[in-house]
Amino acid sequence: MWANIITVDGPSGAGKGAIATRLADLLGWHLLDSGALYRTTAHACARAGVELTDHQQVADIARHLQVEFLRSAEESVAVYLQGEDISRVIRSEEAGRGASAVGAMPAVRRALLERQRDFLRPPGLIADGRDMGTVVFPSAALKIFLVASVEERAQRRFRQLLALGENVTFARLLRDMEERDERDRSRSLSPLEPADDAVVIDSTATPIDAVLAKVMAEVNRVYSER
Ligand code: DC
Image 1: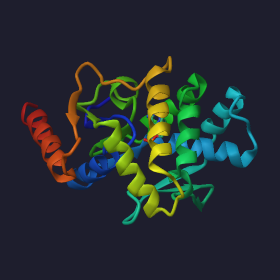
Image 2: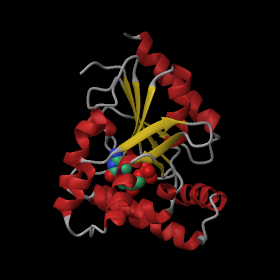
Image 3: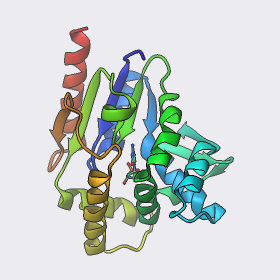
């Protein structure tokens, strides 16, 4: 696999989406929002009446998803399922919980592996997720792992969800986020953890432009050495 890949992994609310989108724009590379694939799988299961306890059926849905991603000005990535724009519904907290549940199923992860690798096209790919650097693109030239305190991540998510018109309380969101972190970290296959060669950046109390500057310094370091 050729190596023009930068992976951006980390827990929910660490700023991966914002950093990955800006990097893709700055470098003119493609973007993979892998969380959207897991979110879309959970959404497609709900629509088809497939119970999340039936792992094989869920994996079947994942394998045959007719999903399309388009870059858009308002959303970093607009998501279409069978031609229908589902960008907003899959950003809800409920969809996030569903995504985390399907993401814990090894059969689903296997079903989505090649689909994710298919996003790699010239001139390069920015891959955003949980296991981009460890499992999906282990040969990536640069692996960023973004972290931030759970309180700050919950605050960021709270503001995003209020803007989407969702009725959530901060306390509930904080608890949900802690639970989701725990599930993503403790699953047996592809747990959320930095690759050994990842650069860990803490975005707590750091404006997005400053985080981007740190990431760009790493991009310049890696590509000037090549
Ligand atoms: O990045 P996100 O918040 O959209 O991801 C939603 C959930 O999807 C996350 O809690 C776990 C799952 N996920 C995953 O298991 N592996 C990925 N590469 C991306 C997301």
